[in-house]
Image (tube, rainbow, N blue to C red; front, side):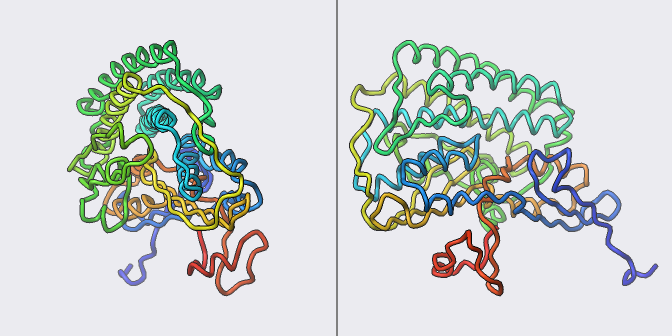
Amino acid sequence: MTEAKKEKFIVPIGPQHPALKEPGNFEFTVDGEIVTDAAVRLGFVHRGIEKACENRNYTQDLYLLERVCGICSHVHATAFVLGVEKLAGVQAPPRAEAIRVLAAELERIHSHLLWFGVAAHEAGFDTLFMYTWRDREVVMDILETLSGSRVHYSVNILGGVKIDVDQKLSDLIKKDMDFLEERTEYYMKVVTTDDTFLGRTRGIGTLSKDRAKLLGAVGPTARASGVKRDIRVNAPYSGYKEFPVKMVIDQTGDLEARFVVRLKELYESYRLIREILEKIQPGEITTRIKRKIPEGEVISRVEAPRGELFYYIKSNGTEMPDRVKVRTPSLCNWGTITDVAVGHKLADMPMLLAGIDPCFSCNDRMVEIRSDSQPSQMMNWDGLRKYGIEYYR
């Protein structure tokens, strides 16, 4: 058979597939076992959260936006309240800002441990998966004690927070941080020395610093390639101004580096949580804010566990926002998958997908609109057209 007549062999993964926890469609063109091309199609979960925000007041939206992502619920609420407070000209009390950071770092620990277990499962290392998710229960119990919930914590309110930390809870958190730090030492040893694990990660999916910048990678995915991009450091917000973060960077850029960066970030979270609990100042945890937010536009950026989370909020002077636009870190990192997949074996693809810690549902918040079709009744077409958006995935 001549090269011109040779047909491509495409292996589909998803939308429903045992290796995927959420629906997404990936098509890998292969030559034998080697991937020669890759394509990704998202948009299988349309929940309309952004549009729903326009029909609810700011307080209701706060709880709605926590549902964009269960693992990152607090950081979504934080991005939203920081934007609304800026529009209203209100500053939350210092103690409230510190508690926001405390909850954010606990959530980061939860997210990284959950991801580590899933990635270990994709590598066929189910014992490590069980260990990680067992230890994850420790931080989930802390969050439940702190907020009353293990998933959607609802710590934030407009103008501050609705929970406080007493000495008894502070001592419990410090004790649990010591335990988790000891367990993280074990995980770091496995990630950097275990031959089976290194065979699935070292030298696999290498993303150079220049490619990471070009593709717009964010979060641990970018920092594992040497990109100094962390909103907590580059543009400190909330309590991070008082409790600065040390950015974790690796220059290798492969899957092993992405594991190492996330585990080192756990150490930094443990340190930061202890510092907050030791130095947090007494005071109020809320301040008054008007129900009607002054007319205007604002951008709010925070560092989610997966990377930069970007919020655009437009107020029309009423109790309901005119527009809420959310850009999640997963959307930025998807491009790295198709870039690094080429040249690797098909068996490496589940690990490459897990390497960016993907979240499908946080991407899929809207129905699709094309410029050559009739506007959907679910969308604010004039608002989208104003900003030059023809369609959105």
